[in-house]
Image 1 (cartoon, rainbow, N blue to C red):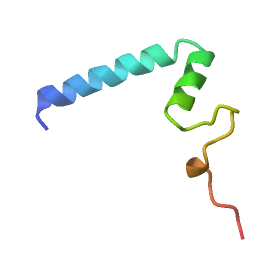
Image 2 (image 1 turned 90 degrees about the vertical axis):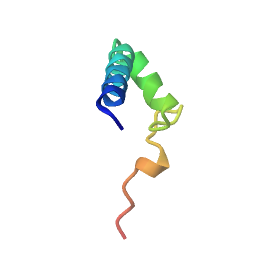
Image 3 (image 1 turned 120 degrees about the vertical axis):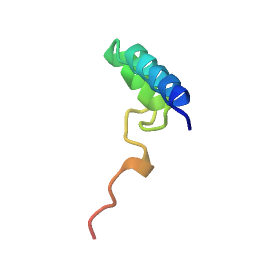
Image 4 (image 1 turned 135 degrees about the vertical axis):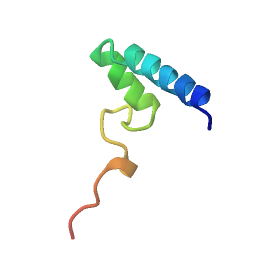
Length: 53
């Protein structure tokens, strides 16, 4: 990957972060859209730590 492509990706990520962190509701929606949290507000299973045995 060349420097121009890396810079393009970095700028896109910065713009996305700025857009999705303007409010807590937008941030929560982004986390749901990304699959990190479920619609009910719980952490998605793949991001939970395994239960202690």
